[in-house]
Length: 357
Image (cartoon, rainbow, N blue to C red):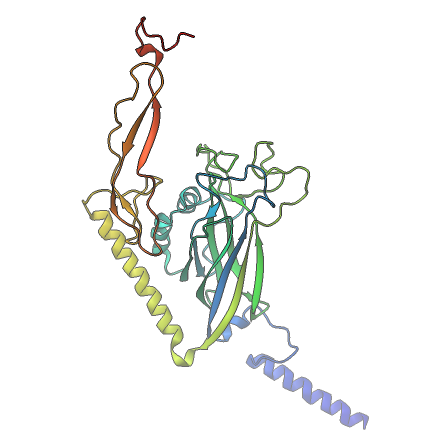
């Protein structure tokens, strides 16, 4: 009996060894990180961003007006291990810095369209119009492009954003079914403002991408400075959910890859056409050109009007016109009127009583 048991265990051990050499998955076997790559499947995921920026959680300097708290569109991509959208403790790239300051993705799109060999899929989540809200989208990954990255600007803010850098959806050889990641505010290191509504003072030289905490920046004026607590609560969460896997035998992988190549080629052609166009310059609220045909288009600013007062403090205005209203999914029109204080006591004559009390 003992001899038969030994023979049986030996046969099982040989079978397990042969199966592992052949790459067959075995229940209870330890998977390597390469297992996702050897399955040869295309995986479809959903991304859901839930924001929790509220006056209750973050009461300090909570912006009530002009503009109220909201979030830009989310811009993301799936990619291989050679690509990096941003990285903590490293300088932000110029396109990422531009997005962190303005919330506009045109420059970032142009930059990424030149790196299509490293990217696989791109996705966008709609703007969240309030501090608390949610938005979602879908994307594809495969064995050689299993990482996902994205950025979302906090509005208003100097250069603050939330995002994920190179999160690998293949863990221990298996595609993650569902995972939720807490998100904390990040500083792009390009603007020196400390509050949500600070003017954009350029940081010179540029700093590094840093996580904003209850004690960083270490300044009482910082909008996230809460020395009485140890950790800030997450300002948002992102959830990745696997929807479906597609096998290569139905050519889905090739079709999607071809589709993404066509989309990026189309984007490059569009950028080239607009860069060579001699039409009227189109600006957004940050003073940058708008590339999307869905965005609002406005003319350049007019000249400033004469000051309303020849003696003392007055006002002057300048205006611009709407050339094209925004369509669904596009950027809304910015302000069409801008006002400045003007005037001076030096313009008053001796007989004026403006400064007599």
